[in-house]
Amino acid sequence: MSKHNKIEILILDDEKQFTEELYEFFQNSGFEAYEANTESEARKILQSNEIDLFILDVRLPGVNGLDILKDVKISNPTMEVIIVSAHGDMDTVIKAMRLGAFDYLRKPFRHIDIQITIERTKKFLLMQHKLRNMEERNSLISKTLEEKIERQFIGVSPQILKVYNLALVAANYPDSNVLITGESGTGKENIARIIHYSSTRKDHVFCAVNSSAITDSLLESEFFGHKKGSFTGAINDKMGFFEVSDKGTLFLDEIADMPFNLQAKILRATEEKTITRVGDTNQIRTDFRIISATNFDIDKRVENKNFRLDLLHRLNTLHIHIPALRERPEDIKPLMIHFIELYANKFNKVGMHISADALKLVSKYEFPGNVRELRNMVERAVILAKGGSLGISDFPIKQQKSDLSITNEAIVSLKINEIKLIRKALENCNNNQQACADMLGITRDALIRKMKKYEIVVNKIMQ
Picture 1 (cartoon, rainbow, N blue to C red):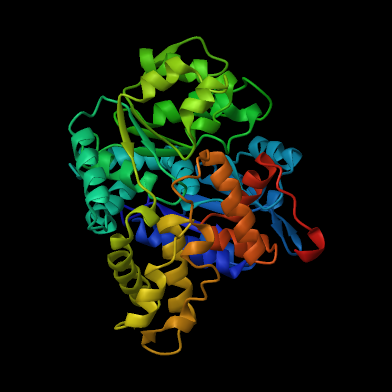
Picture 2 (picture 1 turned 30 degrees about the vertical axis):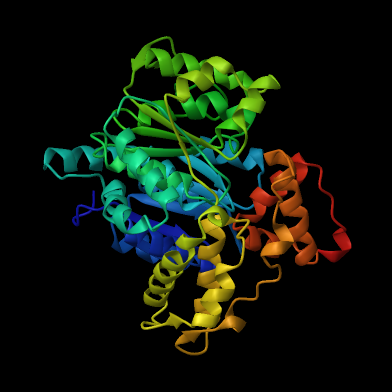
């Protein structure tokens, strides 16, 4: 273990932007991070530092990442290795696991995905145990997140203050499950973190899981863990999400998209607080609280037999709904000021501000992507700004409030409304999916999933 009492992480990838982004995330999350873009750079770092965790791209120019994996596991068998790749080649994944890789992540992935993977490694759990013995207040990641909670909650509207107060109420009942609803980008995960870090569970793991992002073949293993040898590639015992969340919080995002065949097992684990790893017979007790979130009308999912009513009742002990940003426009200004300050400091453009005309323009925009879209918009504006003031030209808003407004007489389902927003955004972006995703404040992968789901087809020539 590092002499700094920090987990030391090395990132090897030929994409400079990728390594820089992960390096910054790890440094800000309490780790000691190193980055390399070539094999030779990585080997020098490995020779001169006590690396605990190696994040390795399997496809590197002129070298096979699996060969590097094989070498480092021979020279340092206790080092944890996480394989990443933009290609979902299952043969490569299986080979990597057989060679000793702890886990595999497919690009692009969110910071929370790599965070949860790290929290499941033996190195992290050993370090967490060591810090607890030293009476440290929080684990490496949760301490950083906790310090940010108060300033991440921005808003002055009665609607958002009600949400915040409900979150504090939920925090006072740490064994009660919570369902958070609201459109994509409204900040459901942030509210979940506020609940967790304001509760007595705050010294333990906040495990965030995208319920729709796990492949069917890995569902049970990811949630319940597995025993060594239980299936091809299972070369070590592995903890599942329920075990990782012991005494902490399991956050299930996009819960409405959870495969139906998994829901009964989730219900049983939630009721009994015991799980059995794949390939094992021993039951393991685990004390977790579930906070789930969805941007769909989950009651309609129940009506359509796509979601279990008994599971909904179990998850919906306390319900918090986050209104869309267009329903609370008075929150736009404080959010704008907060994000401008955040990115001005990040990009060394201290003192940047927004003009009154620009603020007025942005305040009239409906933000179909909600707070996430606003944040992305501000980040882009700060990066591209030439001076110290952001003006109208820095916010190329293509559609005004009237473009996406829904009249009171229009009775439409959330699904129809979402389809309408996606089609309108695609139209305004000339069918460019990345630009459309940025406008909606979601990732390109999320956009593609929604397009497939709603059978929205665009002209590929225009991509």
